[in-house]
Length: 74
Image (cartoon, rainbow, N blue to C red; front, side):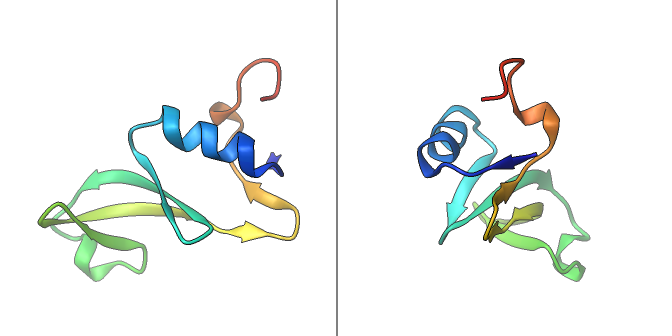
């Protein structure tokens, strides 16, 4: 599923504690991990390495898991 509205994605990031912005991409923090430093998708967050999922902005919007959307599709 794609979220094609900046307002909708901004609301999702505000409401979800493990999401944050990195430019126009959304970062999903998957938690602290000692091995994260060896991974492509890792970030240094609050003095430790975390595994992350990067949701890049595309020409269609942000591709997000269906579980992130409510039953009405928003």
